[in-house]
Length: 53
Picture (spheres, rainbow, N blue to C red):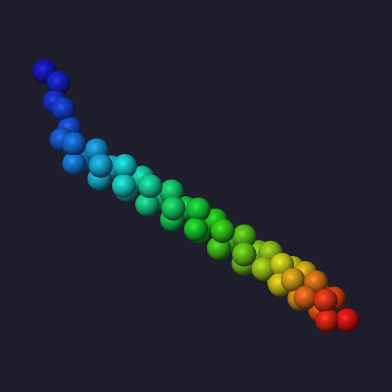
């Protein structure tokens, strides 16, 4: 005998997996910002200052 999942359970699982993926991507982006943020900021500042001169 095979039990079928209710439709709303599948939606909850899908929503949970999507939320987990979004959290993982956000965490990865934040980690990269922490690691490379100083260089990114300095590059943006230098290019911004070059427009002033």
